[in-house]
Image 1 (cartoon, rainbow, N blue to C red):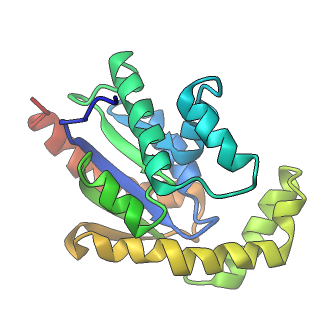
Image 2 (tube, rainbow, N blue to C red; image 1 turned 180 degrees about the vertical axis):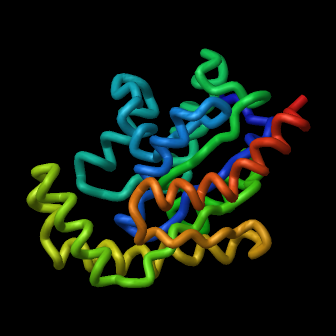
Length: 209
């Protein structure tokens, strides 16, 4: 029987279409004292495949099926619990920066009992064709040939629009902050910091009990 999380983690969500730079910004923020970055991919990669949860994950993954939302959230919850127990993530000090989760409204609902979302940083990509070009260039640079296929990229955008983008409407508009994602990583980071430094300062003044 799993332990129920009673503490709500004070959280900043990095949100945006594929290729918007969520991972890049998250990794940078994760190196800044006072922020703890966790990407959904990190949760999957750190899973013990010999555990019951790992075996359940592999049962779906080996069939090429999407992992159900409830299983994804349980994997995330156990990962967060472990990071907290090991003091890798310190809720009294660190703001949690999530990237790649929630992926849909159902996941957002499940996460609501665990998170106090202080801000949703929406990395906006106004030029779709420019984004596709950026993603193809990045995939080729990283030698991920399959990811450079334009049809695959466009399909990812379709899935995002249908399943993930509606998550924005789950959260109050007052905490959603739009950031132009088409600038350089440093330029985007500058805008991100302008929005979250006041939140971090407030967190330091009023840490979790």
